[in-house]
Length: 231
Ligand SMILES: *Cc1c(COP(=O)(O)O)cnc(C)c1O
Image (tube, rainbow, N blue to C red; front, side, top):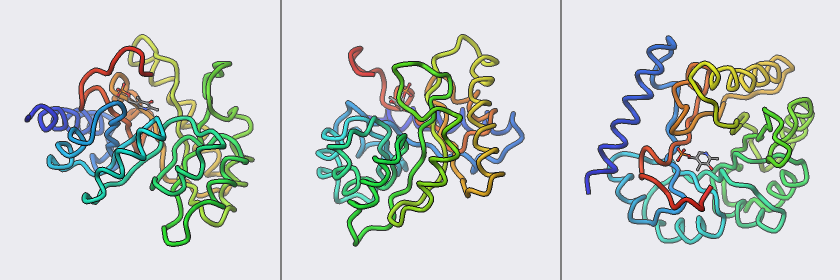
């Protein structure tokens, strides 16, 4: 049962090495452990090894898992698509949502965020490489959406998130991530406060950190492979 602990150590070492190469401090990049498709016991094991923040894609699966782990002081991040009929669950159970890509969804999350909880921490998902079927706001609409989301009372806008198409090598990965970084800088220069760039997964976390990621979302390298059907 030390596999998850060992894996976490290896991922921290990868992050530290990537930060060093990029001339950044290792404490500038947060590790989000993506526990989708894995049960509460895997999350417990990761928590015992020092991990505190967990990412989930499927809302109902997440709500069940969060309920089973109430005894632990964990931070839960929604990183899957959010349909209108799921906003109430996201607002009630998560600490963060990385996948806000429409004002309507943001408004519902703000209205439905329970009064006793702190504001929901939000990233805007950007469709940075324009895949037609992909979630995310178009890059040219991101600034306007960021301004609108920043005004919602029960949300705290934190940054941008993107999932670029897999690229064959480090340079290609970094060039894609650099586009999201440029948009992040542009929105900040326009006067919207952002501090989080949610970029990078198991296969491309080094390239994401080189491009300026402040939060990497890592599943496979921590928990192992998932069934092929799961995205
Ligand atoms: C599944 C998933 C991850 C983790 O991917 P790995 O390749 O297993 O590290 C990160 N981000 C999002 C949005 C995901 O859906």
